[in-house]
Image (cartoon, rainbow, N blue to C red; front, side, top):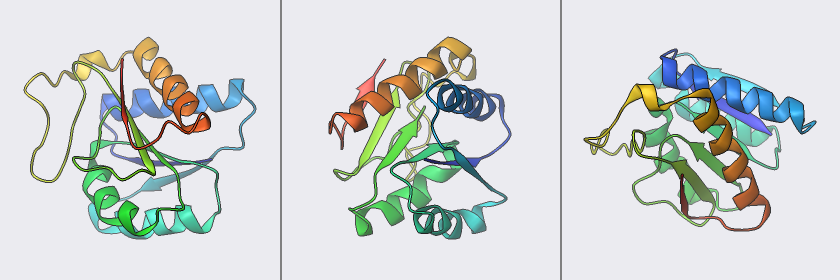
Amino acid sequence: MVLLTAGDDNPTRALVTAVQEWADDEHVDLRTIAVGNAHDAISSIARAMEMGPDLIVSAGNDLIDPLALVTPSHLDEKFLVVGAELAEPTHNVTAVDWDGASFRGEGLGASSTYDPASFTRERCAAAIRAGAAAVLNDLTGIVVWL
């Protein structure tokens, strides 16, 4: 699995920690790509795909628009977005969201109920578990709502 991460805000850090802890608990081979700036996002997604993972997980709102651009052209890759969602996902993109999250990109921005404090350790841990379970059970192209 490859974790793509962008941003150093508290919600992104909480998501990254949850993914790392889940991968450690489940003995998942996790590699991480930290996107330095917005201009590096698409090349970072391409680099993640070149690594040949079973799943690419994204954490950070700055990845939403680049993922929306790339994922429809790579339907053979599985993507999991935690704490946000693509406005128009394809069948290969699964998202996990909750009240307080749900950034959608494409100029839509954060929902009116966006709350960085909702990215608790427990909520982020539940998000990665629910998202991974959905993908492993071929429930993709959906938004899992916690």
